[in-house]
Image (tube, rainbow, N blue to C red; front, side, top):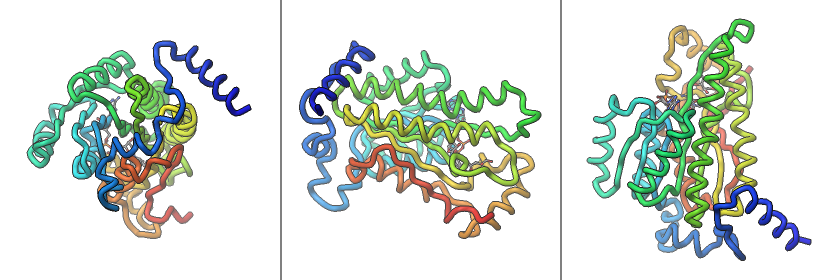
Length: 301
Ligand SMILES: NC(=O)c1ccc[n+]([C@@H]2O[C@H](COP(=O)([O-])OP(=O)(O)OC[C@H]3O[C@@H](n4cnc5c(N)ncnc54)[C@H](O)[C@@H]3O)[C@@H](O)[C@H]2O)c1
Ligand SMILES: OC[C@@H](O)C(O)[C@H](O)CO
């Protein structure tokens, strides 16, 4: 029964992805493969949190992304490709990372995550430049606060397009190269506490819906791609002290957010980075389809 289910699934997947070779026998996520991806893991307990291979980070010059980039490099990534709308403004910060990690290959590309052709080309170029895409961290995101009754549908579409469809486009492009390479991979989406409950006081229906959808996208892809040794997880940050939360009119909201949070403050991007590292490292090899909330204890309503 199990064998016939497996062969059905194999036939189905071959039909869907005819150009890709399916792995036979043991899952690519087998111990041997994980150890070969993370050789340091065998040497020490600390090595379990080492990261191996090349990472693509979307929204790569954003506030959280720059901190996550540093953490990923600190833990051993050999290459880093940042995708963002405007990378020129962040050249100095990228150079600072390169100076700190001279052995790593670090590059950035202007890519709109909603543009499938551009994303596919950029992923292909990343494989050419770095040799592989082993990890993808999707951080590109926009907010757009508006009352549902008044919100232009164009704004709704853009938020869903960047936050949800953009994550799918990037995940699929990265997964295709991971499947072809046959070495597994790690994908992380950035959802939000807004995927779990409605924020107060700002109205942000599109953002909340886009992040809620990411949770099921993550679970669905985790289930489909586990057979290739690819894990798909998400993080759900609470309010982080970044420019995203400094928008016009948010000063009063920030006071409310802090008052209602048991920790009494917003989080720092550094306080998120450890979860990302764990999900990308050997320690996270059996974590798949999970969402980790990092929000200082939730909001008290
Ligand atoms: N800051 C928070 O409180 C918070 C909380 C929960 C979730 N998040 C999520 O974390 C992620 C990063 O947030 P941040 O605080 O670093 O914000 P940020 O604005 O500093 O970073 C977001 C980045 O995404 C980029 N981006 C936007 N649209 C894009 C597109 N179409 N293509 C490519 N790049 C695009 C932006 O240029 C920016 O650099 C977002 O997805 C956000 O929704 C943030
Ligand atoms: O839910 C917190 C964040 O996702 C987000 O930064 C905020 O809701 C923006 O208003």
